[in-house]
Length: 258
Image (cartoon, rainbow, N blue to C red; front, side, top):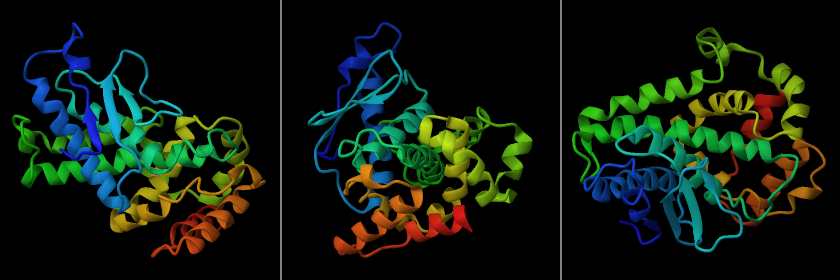
């Protein structure tokens, strides 16, 4: 296991509802596969270790924690749930959530983290077939369930008809109508999912796009009055840091402003 990922298996094993002793080896393997898929796409390691443990409340990455502290509530052999929850919270770490904690554009980071869950589920639905994680019984046969879970996760927030039509909507028009609400509340999951789905195909085709997202929150986001200002600052930040890639701000601008 990567030295950057520490799994507190005891937090699962001491909870009455979790089966033992199989989970003590299976959970770290599942989380490691998520870590490798997403961190590999970002192309860089986190700047601190990440400690993952179980708790009964909603999944969360704690503020101002060092090492980073991620809490999830997936249990037993619900591997898809582990993947979905950990991917989302790991994405917050990789997009530097602690640098700018609350601002009007947090909805975009939330949408990226929702996309991270969908991205990793799709990745593992394929990679587990040929390279299943160690210590997870029947992982290769289980692999297609990740893609099924991905679709069911999206359908929590929209009807099947909306899901089938999502990429055919006129995104700039939708965005103009929804932006104000998203700026007021970054956790409107039905809107986060639309943004995530709109971007997902591009990131699946070119996973290296995640590298741009590794520079989010490197600047004073609070100075960005509009989302266009935010995209411009992101672009400048990438250029100032000599990033090999300056693609995603332009992609987002084109998709949501036309």
